[in-house]
Length: 263
Image (cartoon, rainbow, N blue to C red; front, side):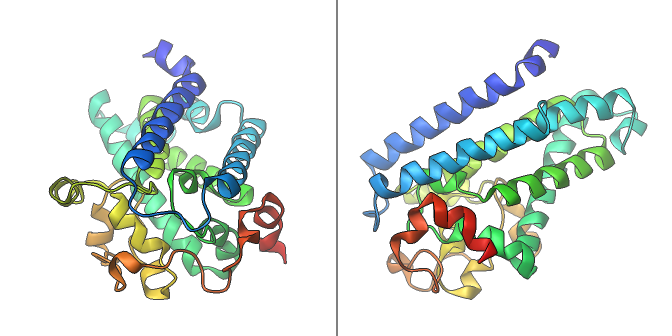
């Protein structure tokens, strides 16, 4: 276990590249629909910002959230460190709890105008594909990092649970933003547990009521339990992606993505 955790960054990068490559190939072989802007214009911007975010996180905290979880464990902070739980139970419980925290964070970024200014950068993408799952403003990434620090400290989440959660969060974000066509039967079954591309695509609709639904990233339960679930967009396959106030291709430039929250 220690060997796994000591290679946290390389493990996460390997899983990211494997998931990204798999979803990109799936998009090429079986796309949900033709992209409006396309890869040549959008992918360099989205991936460059994703790389910038990774650099910022490592600059702030070289060990990221997993490294902080080691500190929490050593100092016996948090709820789980004061319970006599088997390690496996603590890992599973921490993954579930942290996924709930990310659901709550996502709702908060939609509800509070000052946070929405940063999160709308993600929603301003005129297409939804695998790179959209990595397109977030650096300020949102830093705020999310701080929130995760607080959640890990309060929960006393074990390092292995935090690493598992971070891998699931990143992989599911790439998966559920992908421009892929899934077999109807498979999608129907998966949707009971995981957030699927069809389910999350509703969240990227220009219709405000649909944008404010389906907030889950990994587990699909939170939206159903907290009544933010919407089965499908009203426009069906003709759903318009993005935000109504940003309909031109400047949203696919790095300059606009980084500066728009401050304008």
